Length: 572
Ligand code: ATP
Ligand code: MG
Image 1 (spheres, rainbow, N blue to C red):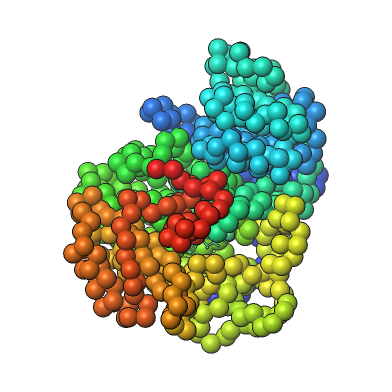
Image 2 (cartoon, rainbow, N blue to C red):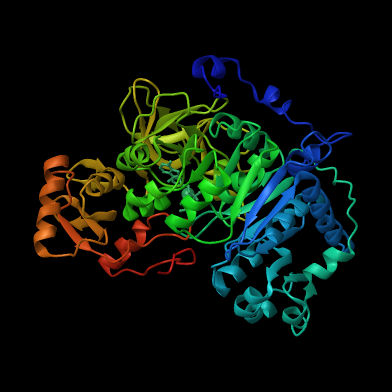
């Protein structure tokens, strides 16, 4: 199978967003709607009976939705909202696990011209209340269990929330006051719906960031974003018509929406959704049984698989896989190489953020991978390394290998159009014709980008800038280490010194001898300036629910400072 992106230079040189837009249909009669591109245009065409979503239940159930079925069900949901009088542009929040109703509601919301706002199902009542209140939610769709555990107690504080649709058996929903029964409304609704005439700049999605570096921000995206979802599905994930794609991310995070819902559907392929959480053997079983060809996951999952080891993989036939990709955090070079050993192919890292709405920098299937690098910018994306020079100005760093802030030229379709209620913060992201990402990186002589760290996490020690990722990656190379989190600890002489926290693989126990061994191991590999001065053991490195190491929390705990916003902290 020929990869979609073979000649990188040539494709970049001839690419235009206007032309990319022509790969989509647009609404009959004008306008653009994400759900039309994802569902209806296939339901009307040759792919109408092709499986669109393959849902795998926690307990082993399976449900396939063809494009035609998906179209009918999402029409029903759009009609439910219309019957309730929910207007265009109003926000519909979703709080549910990865169940089919979540996907139907998401796409139905987009069809009606309302804004889809996913919430992660493991949030507690306060983060839920905060986000709905900030986002001025009109409708909430949730399950009976989640309603009782999390929503009931904060409901009175959300006067703007007019309708709560609850998914559950009749006996579960019957005794809840003041809610609507989701399934009952769906059963009564018409299967035909004419999609709202949305324009490319109409608001479509509201996504909260992961909260890795502070209070989560609400990033606003428009229907035009679908052009980028589609193009990146082609180039970075190499979608072909017969692919079975599995994105393991939850739609509570942007990856789970842009790639867990939209991009595979705009390509008319089959997208697998697993309701259950990570379990290495379950995952390998799914790849084998459903012949997954393109697999998109995250470094945290890869590290968990590495922890389990490669022996179990030998019990599965994973030969259907032709591309394994990862996003969300830097992918340690060790993990890229492990992919080769485990799956017979390396893992392709790519980089983007909630704000960028889609993949911006990637290791392409047909291009040499440099382990530890994020790859090269997508066609249509201009990325640069810049340095801030005084107030409101930046200059581009053109020499290869020099660190600076990763920046993008604004104007790609899935660029966020604002931070919810934070206009000033949004404005500050744009300086001198660049969007500043808040990440530090460098570019090598061949145009590959290398992640250094988040601007907030970078350690300044004795005049050197040290990215925690570099140190974590070396520690991960030691046989005993499962995960590592690295911070800067204030030091009167050096400014900051490097301190590491490690968790161990099951066969290893923490001891002073192991600490000394790790200190020596890191010093030999990294040199005295960059190597950690101190290493402590933790049972688990704290992470966000989207799987990112929360270095700010390690630091706050180390220094006895307030722990800050923990709404997205994964609880172990
Ligand atoms: P917050 O902005 O609330 O602190 P967050 O930045 O973690 O949270 P996301 O938008 O989910 O929220 O994550 C985007 C960030 O994740 C990027 O800015 C970058 O720091 C990191 N990231 C994503 N992919 C990669 C990658 N391939 N390599 C390195 N870092 C990555
Ligand atoms: Mg961020």
